[in-house]
Length: 332
Ligand code: UT7
Image (cartoon, rainbow, N blue to C red):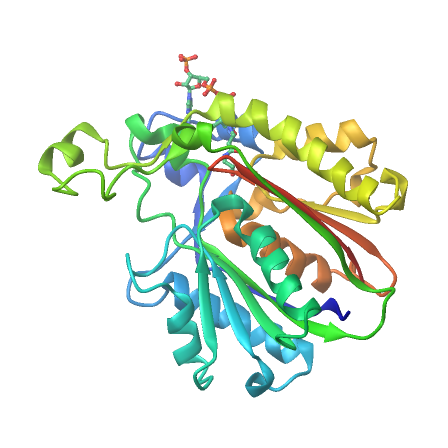
């Protein structure tokens, strides 16, 4: 059986920086509240007419392909993880396929929210392991600033989410001692409505009404407290599951890259595993929660900072809407 290595990483974030002080002008919030509860200082918002979820993904992908050393025409398949696609349908993966000029290769969109990148990594790993594909482009990209409302009624979500994209090229390798060691995926659909965007769904015949705009039900809803409580439990559990599956211990991990949901969640996990600061990568301070894009953006920045070098053991873990969660162990 083949193995899957991460051959290249890249990311792109929109240039428009929105600070906590900027948000103070739109809603009853403060830099102190946001910083204390989430760790976030600023985030990026897309520029209409310039960035879209797919186009940001293309920019991240070009960098990942360039850094992978392969030619773009060697890519066999695209997986696109997002909860904020350009269109209700078709998915954003096909736009990437067209924009990159990749002739007729398959493009799969997956909707697993904050766990989307880990789910995508697992899918890609199976395709590569079985020999079906050699090189897969996996993108996580989000444009969330256009469905949060900068208002008092939506302040619990408005201060958290941001826009951006990250991408990786996953390639077949014959080396048995490197690459993705394992992936672990979970879901608990009974909590689907604890972090949800109801509209425009298909339950109602009329999918968007003026009332939805007025009463705010058009906006995503998050039971922040509940998400937080489940996240800290599931993150720990799924990281331990990955370690156990590979007969490894927390000490073996060189770098943990958690989904950037909330700095307090990352710090909680760090404490559980007694990791020193240098073993946990966080960039939520600059980008907020970019959902499916958060892990590949962090992976790309960690690589740029020289933290991902041959021989290192990286642990990726995520939790989010669904609820869905997952982890992956990768030997570089
Ligand atoms: O990516 C995965 C998905 N998301 C997450 O993982 C998020 C998980 N949850 C969280 O990060 C936190 O629950 C939040 C940051 C969203 C909220 O923090 P919290 O400590 O759980 O606050 P809370 O929801 O319990 O609200 C505490 C107070 C409330 O006021 P009252 O009822 O005590 O008077 C809120 O209305 O804080 C208020 N509040 C705010 N105040 C200032 C909520 N949002 C804001 C805000 N600025 N932006």
